[in-house]
Image (cartoon, rainbow, N blue to C red; front, side, top):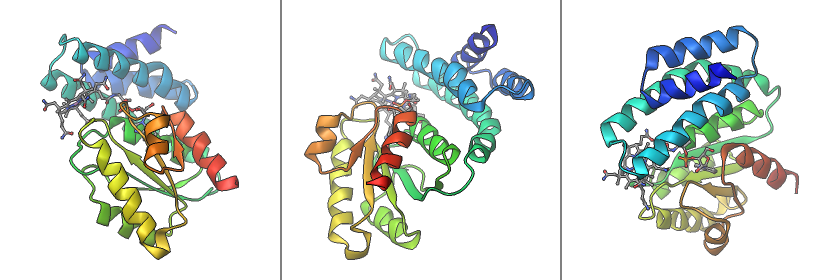
Length: 211
Ligand code: B1M
């Protein structure tokens, strides 16, 4: 659909006015918010990721693209949440200590909300202690950890160890994800689940809670 390409382009060029306008327009036409997310926003950010990697885009441009993505996400978020009728459980989610990347984590958070989970999003740069505290205070069923840097991946293991040490937080199911994370890595640090993308994170969470 041409509008999706235009939406992806608005992300790529960091045009937050257009990204909002197009998203609003597509929503007004009754298009499924998850489709707008996947077809326009994620598609646009994927190109941003590739260009950043190839040094064809630099940090300020990437930040501007992220702002355009967030502007559109503000419109989609409540709609994705509405789509989930009753709560399937509580999920605490955050980006690990030392890591400021939150675009993918926000997508996972939104998709979980959209699927009917009650989500407690702690944000970025979260210490193991804060994760444990949040898991306990919200009686979480799922703990989601996101890391985008190879240097912050080890923080996932520290968090898992901390959570497993804490008696009351022990039973929470922990899923991990983020671009450098793999199933193999997830297994090696004792995570209960791994997801390569936001939709899979929902599937894995649902599966873990039905076991
Ligand atoms: Co940074 N960055 N960045 N960055 N950045 C990467 C990750 C990098 C791969 C770019 C590169 O060099 N090719 C590289 C990491 C290299 C490495 O560790 N091997 C990198 C670097 C080096 C850095 C800095 C160190 C740069 C610097 O300062 N010199 C710095 C670190 C800051 C810090 O965190 N302490 C930095 C900073 C930034 C910005 C602030 C400019 C910005 C972040 C803005 C923001 O998030 N608010 C940024 C961005 C945008 C990127 C890239 C370009 C895009 C990331 C992104 O948002 N992707 C990224 C390059 C890339 O990934 N190709 C890069 C889109 C997003 C939808 O995908 O986050 O992978 P992603 O999420 C996916 C899946 O991974 C999965 O689902 C999501 C959706 O399907 N997923 C989960 C994510 N979390 C999950 C959790 C789950 C399950 C699935 O369960 C709980």
